[in-house]
Length: 270
Length: 267
Image (cartoon, rainbow over all chains, first blue to last red; front, side, top):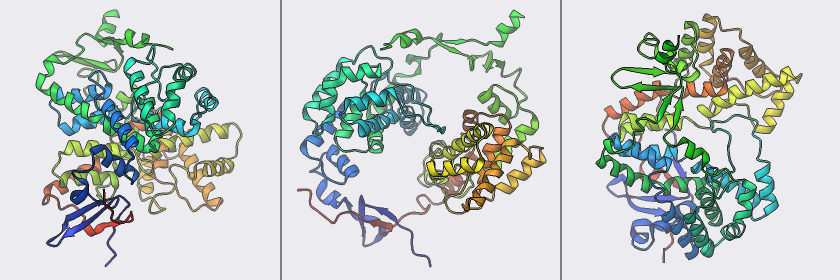
């Protein structure tokens, strides 16, 4: 008989119950006994950091990630990803579908997970060097091959529709910069306006998130995953709320869609 | 800074050429009345019209259906996207949730939409380069050096692709066996072999070449393929949902091969 295929992992180990090889008697996350030791001692954020990085966070790492997580938890009902979840809620879609909708919409290159990853790539490349940022923003890399992702239409991490960096984001940046274990957030706070001028757009929450994840030692893929994950609570809460309020009280845009090629109008014109 | 001017102009203002429902009366679908002008279309014809705004002749529609049918995700739950459908079934989730996620998973880099897009794009770029006087062997070598592979050539586990023969036979029977891009696809394979790369064409390249010969753009081809794998996913869901719950290929604890740090204390 062939050797049984296994799942190779550095993250997780289990010891089976004596009476059932499919039930774990003990679970270890990066060597820590989850139910025998970690539960009751670790915070959710510490455990989250451990899962991704394989080590417990320092105090400042945990505090920085915790505070970013609070700021990301609810993008608010105007956000496209939350709008998507609420659209599921009002129609009575399954709860998982509401979160899937929030993830799909919130994955994008405008204000979404993909933008965070691309912004983090810029941090990896440019670090705290203004000429590098200037060069990267002005000469964005040309990708000759097509991809499932569309070409980027603005500098990642900046909001093309903002007039200025909004107050909550400036407050958040100042707060995170004061406690971050890395140099990126401090540098971003000190050079924000200069970089915004080069980018031609104000800093966005994706840019602050990218700088934070970079300071915490996450890779762009890890930052993207965390951004997607950490924004789901608001989507869930708003979806449930709108389900109970009902679709009659949710915007339907009754008179907002304007058909430019109505065949009946064309016929009348004939 | 642009500021919010575009958002202000767009608030409660969405102009569309794609369609609108007039409840209780009629539906406009890309400038046509769905129940009057499009009522006799087959599903594939409507899908193609929705994507491109163009109509295709019956032979083309048969080809596009054939690429879906023969190139669908086989009902084999080992294939990663199908496995989502099976796992949804065995976990007693809904079919729609499982299939929705399985479609999303099909947008992968080693199979599915990633190589599909890159394959048709490769043919368009190669055609342009050849028209500019470049040599095919140089183009192929350059692509391999730059990207460590050519989308549509080679497969994850085996080199031969069982879909090539039936899809080619279908295309030939419909009169599409001599297209320029199809010819190019085979030329690339020959060039790879001549350059001593043991890499063969797979169905992604064949489908891309056939679609390019029918005038599809890279984007249109991508959109057309979005639901292509559903055919094989639903049987996977059905079977797993129909058997004892939780019995689809469960892992015992000892199937986890731990390669991380030794036990340690949180304190």
